[in-house]
Length: 327
Image (tube, rainbow, N blue to C red; front, side, top):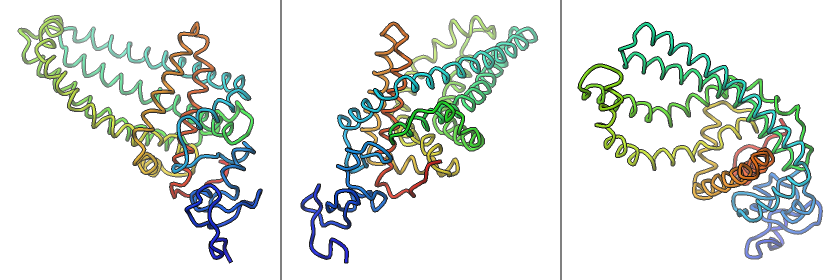
């Protein structure tokens, strides 16, 4: 017979009937405390052990406790986490240099062939920027997911292993698909807006020269641009927050790109404000590292990644998504 059959109540939530007992201390716990049966130990034992499990769930977390837990794990593994961030920075820089060089060469070739055709030059520059973002995003994103994997390992009580940075290479296709979908969802409206306003400005310019377009055409559409940005800002933030944990889910589970986006939306649903707050605080932590003689940005970025992964695990636990074994 289950504990609830005896009328037992949860030790952490005294008003809620118990559904099972903790395998470590024997205390009664409800479905919330066991993350709908995904955890065999109560939250107190998980917090005490600090290994193998993450102690928070979407119905039982707050910034203060998640921050304290992440900071404690950071203190233990800060050196190797910093090495992982340094490797990510190096990869990003190398790919960025390659992409910028390709874009510059393509723009220069078109500029020599059509020096007085601003529309064509703008189109080539735009396509070059998109190509740069796709290539850079794919390479950087796969390594970024590797950093998420290391951060999750640390939050689950394991050592920070630099080889895990490249554990997500096999998912490059799925990440690229997810990345392109996000690019269309978020960047698509912005590109359409910029392209439309640039075309209007070109038509309103006094001549077809690039110089006149830059001096007069853009100034004439500037008020329209500001108005469009104001209108699009809140919807884009809403969508961005909804898919912000897609890469984390793709790293954590063996799902498709569209499923990762769908699961992220489900996890963040009802928690957009906390998600924004965690992201804002992670940004402040990173900025604090920049101000600490710039060198501090490396460990600060590692701590920020731990914090966001802590949010991810908190929102995933108890969400009803299928549990996963260690990928």
